[in-house]
Structures are given as C-alpha cells and as structure tokens.
Amino acid sequence: MRLALAAVIFCLAGMAVAQTIETSPRPLENPRLLTAVPPLPQAVAEASAVTDADPLGRSIRPLPRPAALAERLAALKAASNAPGLDLSTGQATDQATDQAGSEVDLAAAAPPTRKERRRKAREAASMDGAVCGVPGIKGEVIAPIQSKVGGCGVPEAVRVTSVAGVRLSQAATVDCSVATALNTWVSDVAQPAFDGRLGELQIAAHYICRSRNNVKGAKVSEHGKGRAIDISAFVLTDGKVLTVAKDYNRTLRRIYKAACGIFRTTLGPGSDGYHEDHFHFDTSARSGGAYCR
Image (tube, rainbow, N blue to C red):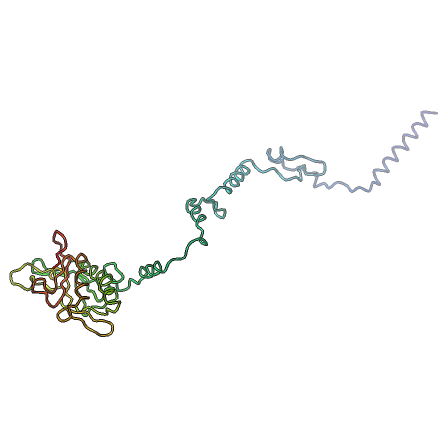
C-alpha cells in the first residue's frame, strides 16, 4: 500500500515538472548561435576572457595593444620632448638654428642709426646699368678691343657714361681699373670738394692707340691700353664751368693732389709741359709706387 502511494506521488511530481518546462516563459535558444564559431588566434584568445554573457565566447573588453606598437609610441613620446623635433612631420630640425632664433630678442635690438641707414641705402642701390660690379659706375660692357699695333688693345673693355652720380661729357672706353678709381675719386674727393654740386666731368681723352704724349717713337701710352683718362673741366649743377686751363684754383689743386694714390699716375699743370690744360689719370701696371707730378 505504501509502495503504491509512493509511485503515485512520483508520477504526479514528474508530470508537474514536465508541465513547468513546457510552460516556461523563456524563449528557446537561437539555433544559429549554437553553430560552431571559428577559433580565435592564440594571442587574442589568451588575452580574452571568455564569459557566460558572450555566447560567441569572446570578451567585450578591448584587446591589449601589441608590444611593438606600444614601444613605437613610447619612443615617439620621448622624442617629442627633445628640442628640434617637428611634430607635424616627425623629422628632426636644425637645433642650432632653432636655438639661435630663440635667443634673438627683436624687441631689445637697437634701431639702425642714420649713418647705417644711409650705408644700407647705398648698398641697396640698383645695379641696373652698372658695370665693373660697382653700382655707381654706369655704362655697358663692350667687346674686347684688339689692335694690330703691339701693346694696344683692351681685353676687358667697358664704356662708362657716369660715375658716382656724375655724368661724363662723352662715354669713356676704359678698363675697370680706371672706372673704379675714377668712381672712388669723384665720390670721396671731387664731389665733397664742390659741396655736392659737381654735375659733369669734361672728358678730353680715353682709349686711343697712340704713343705717349703723341711723341713719335715713344712707348705706347696707357690710353692705348684702356688704362687712362683725361679730364679738362668740371661742370657744376648751376651751370658754372671750371676748366683746368683757366681755373686751376685752390679747389682744383686740392682734388688733383688727392688723386695721387687712387690712381697710379697723375699728371697736370706744371708736371711736364704736356698736361697744362687737363688732368691725366692712369692705372699703369708698372712696378713701384704711384707717380704723381
């Protein structure tokens, strides 16, 4: 009797359990999720923690950064703190230049003086029309001058029209040694002597293939080599003309004397009887010092 009662109770309990499972509100598992998932790479699988919440067996936590990438980023971070790194390109720059630039205090720099401004203005003068590499010498480079007469000719000839802002009465064919010396003499000697009022030089002679002082049988003149120039008069900006022949006054004497050293040879009134009406200046290549009479 007890065994039969126990069997009845057991059967009733089983029916209740079966009824509970059949009436459970939980949805059935998705058969697609039960399909086999390809295994993850070993490195990822070791870094991932499989949880019950992820039916695919993968962790939702971010994967750790690869060791090689971590080392690279650490190196870049350390380099970014070093001077001379251009963060936009990752390339090193000139540290000496950056350091020098950072040390310049523009606010503390003194403004240029009036003398410095004048000097810079002269240096910035236009080279248009200049010859011999000097802004104050205007003219043009011409073809080398050759001659059948031995000793005559100018290998590097220029035709000069003005020096130091003072025009020449005629374009003078010379070499750059004469052009440069004449420019210096006018700028530093003649123009200051006339209080800046010198406007023109009257040129009596420049290149010409002839003997010295036109004496037959004499050596070739420096004029025949393009290394000499003759000046007969000075024209001021007010139109006044001072000639060597008639106005050899104190001013002309002073500027003539000051030409000695700038030119290698200076000849004028009283020197030898051939230069009473003009100044002869040349840059002869002879040895020794200047010849001034």
